[in-house]
Amino acid sequence: MQKEASLPSMPFRLRSPLVAGLASAVALAALFAACAPSRPGVRFEISYPASLDAGPLDGRLLLVVTKHTDREPRLQVGASPASQPLFGVDVEGLRPDQPATIDGTTRGWPVESADQLPAGDYTVQVVLNVYTTFHRADGHTIKAHMDRWEGQHWNRSPGNLMSAPRQVHIDPAASAPIRISLTEKIPPIEAPKDTKYVKHVKFRSEILSKWWGTDIELGAIVVLPEGFDEHPGARYPIAYDQGHFPRTFSGFRETPPGPELPGRDRDYAEAGYRFYQDWTSGKLPRFILVLIQHPTPFYDDSYAVNSENNGPYGDALTQEFIPRIEKQFRAIGEPWARVVYGGSTGGWESLAWQVFYPDLFNGTWTFCPDPVDFRHFQLVNIYEDDNAFHPNSEWKRSAVRPWARQTDDQVMMSQRDASHYEAVLGSHGRSGDQMDIFMATFGPVGDDSYPKLLYDKWTGVIDKSVTSYWRDHYDLRYILERDWKTLGPKLVGKLHLYVGDTDTYYLEEAAFQLQAFLESTKDPYYAGTFDIGKREPHCYAGMPEYPGQRVEERVLPEMAKRILATAPKGADVRSWRY
View 1 (cartoon, helix red, strand yellow):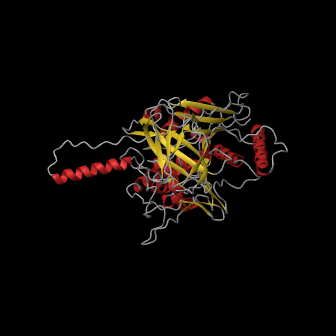
View 2: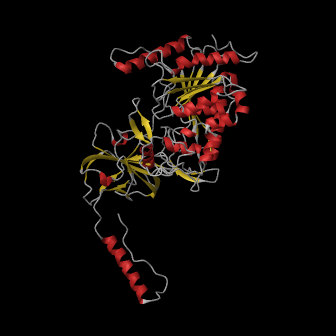
View 3: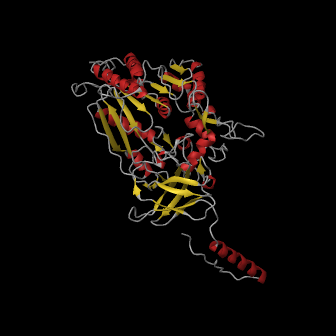
């Protein structure tokens, strides 16, 4: 609802009839404009009742428009060509029954304006991704979404407000608003139950809570070896699995699949049962596996390092998390018996942990890592390119740089697509998605207290003032080359990388550049391995021996071999090998 128009107050004396006349004309024009009929165009007015939330609320209103009715509209959005139109706008201090507006001026993706929607009948749904105000220890105050243990998914985060799916008629030539009421909250997520082999741990991090100015939790999903309870004197090597936010461990299947499962579903079910058999029979070495839960207000995980925008997650994980888990579950608790692995985001994290904490871990098995050399930040050279959307050119400005592809090189998303999608999900780097967590992790804090973005999400123009910060702090190839004299002796034999040469997100080129440096090392030679999968997409982790084989089946024996070969004299290499 518009506020009533009022004439501007003029606390000064008008100095001439001409000035007075002009001022009166301007005031009358403003009054007539306010009273004039609304311009034609799509306009949604969105509100929530006091019975749902007392308010006021800050957050991001997200409207989804679709013609498909197989799922709720909020579940039909993503970084893919199949995504349905999404429009987003920030709200601050939104009170009950106070309408917020999404109209033709609100940016969207893949349709940039709601006025571009063809007239017709659609199903729409609105979600308010609710923000929390954080008063951080670094002196900055920001508003962002507090993860509710859903892994930063706005469309299923408990406590977010949403409307019921509703059929509406949209006509860009019409002027009447479409009014939508947010009538429910997304319910809490049921916590997974412990089993004999899988345990769930969640605790308040003192380090992170102090920095963020509110309670921040860390979690672990711990997979125990067969015989853990029956051998109370045994202490075990431990492998940390880095990756996106895991709800639980789903790699086991304790019974064989029935005949009702067809195709790939059956392959994965059979592989899960085989892994369970190998895990419990002793065919695989006795390890503790730990999946890490460390969501931040910017993403479903922190990238496991200290950063200006995410805070001291590296400190919290190495100083609080690891000691707590290893004490509680009887790990050997020494660096020689501690390894790390992971793919994609977890690939970068696993390599970063080994590089940033070289004395803490005895090896990383890193699969399809996110960019490890920012000369190929996917296909962007952040140091030489002027624009993330297209190569340098005197005249050519069309957005041609790919972001995601199929193995036949069919481009599914461009860098501009991915960036516009995230810009619609959230302003100031708050999309909760991939490019924004890169910028929150790798970049400095901006003058507005939010991450200083590497490039403008709408134009692609790169901010050269941040590239040296990225390089010096998080370009892993650069850091390894810069510091090899001191890092090299601590990393010999510890680096094992895997990447497909047709990675879906163009991550292979950065990995190849890292490989070129590591293979050139001397005094010492790195003595690690690279496994390059021919025509393999994201996330290549070595060739499976049978369909659906879990990566642990291949790497745990290698990890055990490394641990036994490097164990110091007198170390416990027997209690866990029953």
